[in-house]
Image (cartoon, rainbow, N blue to C red; front, side, top):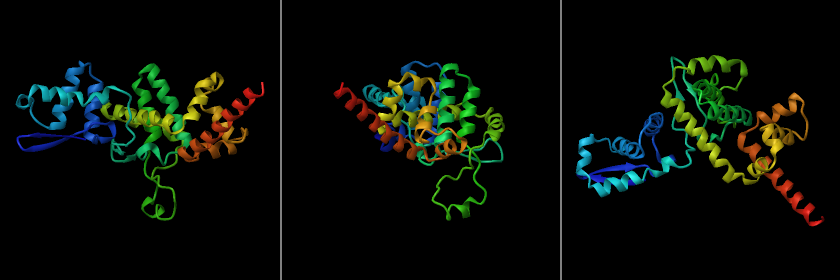
Length: 267
C-alpha cells in the first residue's frame, strides 16, 4: 500500500492487485471496458482511490500526482489478483456465492469448465460466455449450511456444480452489471496466472506437448485416474479439490521429466 497525505488527511492507495477493495476492482473493471488513454485511466483511478473532487487534484504537486499515477502501473501488466473481491452476487432475491480466495476450495471439474469458457471468451469476446463462467463459479449456498459446516471438513458453502442448472443461472446472470462480469473475469485470470509459479512442471508439460494442448485438460485428468476412462474414475478426479489435483499432477510431471532426462543419458 502507498500512503498519501493531503491537508492532514491520509489515504491508502493499492500498489498490487490483491491490495484493492471490491469497489476499486469494480471501478477498474468499468474503466477497462472504456477506451481511455493511459493517462486518463490512471488519473481516474487516482481520483477514485483518493475520493476527492477532480478540481482538488490541483492541490497536489504535479510531480507528486505523476508519481502517484505511476504507482498504478501494475494494473497494465499481468493480472495477479487472487483475492475474490466479489464473494457474493445477488441479481435478484437469491444470493450466489463465489469461490474462495485463490479458489482454494474449488473442484478441479469446475476449474476446467471455467477455464475452457475463458479460452472461448478470449477468442470471441462474447459477453454471454462471461455469464457462463459466472454460472459455473457462483452457486447458491448449500441447504442448512450453518449446520453442515460444523460437521464436515469441506469449507465450500456452494452447492455442487450440476450441468442442468448452468443454463438457468447463465440466463439469470445475463443482465448483470458488465463491471461485475469483468471483475470476475479478472479474478479468475489472476488465479490462472498464479498457478504456473506454484506448479511449473504441470504447465511446462502442457506447453511442450502439442497433443495435450489439442485435447486440453483431458490427458491430465486421465493420467490422474491411472489411465482409466470410466465415468466413476474420471468423476473422482473432477470432483477432487483443485489444489490436491495440481499437487498430484506436479508430482507426475516431475517424474515424467526425470524419466526423459534418464532416457537421454542412455541414448
